[in-house]
Each structure stands twice: as structure tokens, then as C-alpha cells.
Amino acid sequence: MRRLPVYFLIDVSESMVGEPIEEVQNGMRTIIQELRTDPYALETVFVSIIAFAGRATTLSPLAELYKFYPPTFPIGGGTSLATGLTQLMDSIDRDVQKTTMETKGDWKPIIFLFTDGTPTDDCSAAFQRWNQHYRRHCNLIAISIGENLDTSLLGKITENVLLLKNTDKEGFRQFFKWVTASIKTTSVSVSEQNTDELHLPATTGINLEKVNPKESKTIDENFAVLLGKCQNTNKTYLIKFARKFGTLNDLECMVRNGYRLAGTYPIDEKQYDQLSDKKYVYRNINTNQLYGRPTCPCCGNQLGFVLCECGKIFCAGEDGHARCPWCGLEGELTSGGEEGLNVNRTQG
Image 1: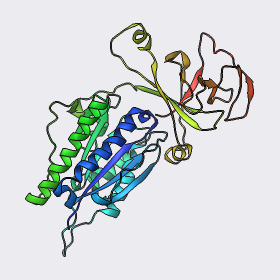
Image 2 (image 1 turned 90 degrees about the horizontal axis):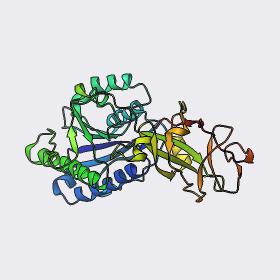
Image 3 (image 1 turned 180 degrees about the vertical axis):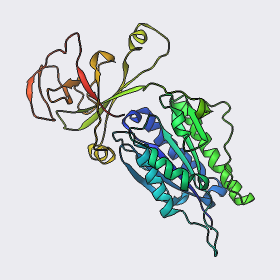
Image 4 (image 1 turned 90 degrees about the vertical axis):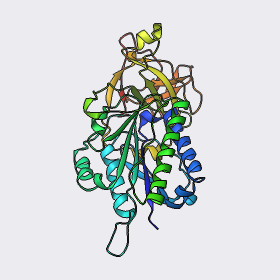
């Protein structure tokens, strides 16, 4: 049987924490459920999920639909697209059956790349390997989730670059419906027409548009993500701030040069460490650019953003005394002053 391999290469960097990664996880469940009701897909489609942040890991090896169960997505530090792409190429080498004199191999793999940020590594070598050995033999669809990515970068590895502008629940629902339709139509094509030509449905009515990477411009980052630790539970969490320019009320006017609190999220420290690179190329951001008062998502402390002398962030109660869970230093809480404090911002 000739298989139709479908790979999902998914960005799980810190800027995806919260609603974006939750919607991707829910979307993957929906895709699998829908494909299992389609006889053509059920016969031909095999699915794999690869996650990348500073490092990459295969969350789900290539498997047929009835055996496939969507995994829980972790979060890691950094956006190493080259590492993710390398993991994908190695998986294709290992998994996809090539055509020989005796038998026909698998159909062209379909790859859906989801990412929301600019890579934090050098992609040139991985891009060169992809373009020389894989591009002609695979169908890669790269989707920028939000507008903070220079889509011209994705244009270096595929002509199918799309921008998902609306990232609310309905926007994601319509998007994953489109992804499902893309796989279904291609599975029909390989089953009935004996061709692996890629069939992408129209994007009418969806906030999803195909872009010309050659005409795209670099867009400033939309997120500032900080790593903290709960002093009561010793668990780690991420504080996510977002640039968001909508209707310009007083707060929006202030945030034009900064970031507004989007939420605080507990993370699995072991998984985070496994998926984060060890370069830790942090960039400072001043607290005067950050608007909103985060609480601790692990213990409920009302002060989720306390900066220790060691440079790390932790939570504290309102009694004025605190102990840093990173370095063990104890002391009384003081204000940062009008000039604010510079804090380490993660790679995102």
C-alpha cells in the first residue's frame, strides 16, 4: 500500500504559550477526528507530529490514522527553525518509503509548518539541505500564525506561504477546517487519480491569505515572554506580554511603545528544558514597557513578577518578605522606581 505521509512541524516556543498552543492542540484533535470519518484518508493517510523550540522532538512518530492519538504539546525556549527542519528531514529519511525497481514508494509527503515568530538560530545550512534534497519531493505549506514573522524567510523553503491573521477561537477553528480539507482532497487525488498533486482549498471566508514572500516586510516582534518560578511550589511559569494595537483607548496609547499582559501560564520545567537550547541569548526589556500586574499561576500569589538580585523572576505574597526560589536569597520587597528595571526577556 502506498501511504500519504502528513507531517505537522509545530512551533512550541514561549510566544505560543497560552491560547495559541491550546488552539493548536484542540485543532489537531479535530483534524484526526474528521480524517477518521473519511474512507480515502483512512486508507492512505499516516500522521506524525514534530515540535520545535530551541530544540526539536518527535512527539508522534508516523502512524496510520486509527492508531494515531494527538499528543499534549510542551513549551520550550527559543525558536530554532533549523533544528525543527532538520528533525523533519531526518524523519523523512527514516520513515518515507522510496520508489525502487520492484515497488512504488509512498506518495509525496505533505508538511504543515506552524510558526509564530522569527527564528533564533541560523537557518542557512538547513535551508540549503532542504532545497537541494527534499523540496521537489515534498509539499510544504508554511503558515505564519499572526503577523510578527517576516514571511520572506518562509519563502526560501516553499512557495506555499500563508498568513493566519485572526488567531481567536473562531479563526483557529476555520483554519483547522481548511487544513483538514487540504488533506482530504489530496487523499482523494492519490486514491482515485493516482497523482500526488497538492490540492489546497480556497481560503474564502477565512482570515487566511496566501502571501508573496518576495513582497513581505520585516515586522517587529509582538511578544515579550518572561520566565518565572513560584517560591511556594518551586514550579516554573511563563509571563506573556503582547503588543496589541486595536482601538486606541488610553491604555492602548500607552502600550504603543510597550507590551500588555496576556497571561501567566504554568509549564513543565523538565519538558521546557529538554526543548530549549542552551545558548540562552536573553535580551533585556525595561519594566516600564510592560503593562499589567501578573499573578502566580502556581500558587495564586498576587505578585507574580518579583525581580531578584540574581536577575531571575519569582512570585511573592503581599507581606513584604520573600525568598528567591532560584538562588535562595531572602529579603524585603522594594519598588523598582520611576526608571524601571531591566529584566531578562526570553528568546520567545
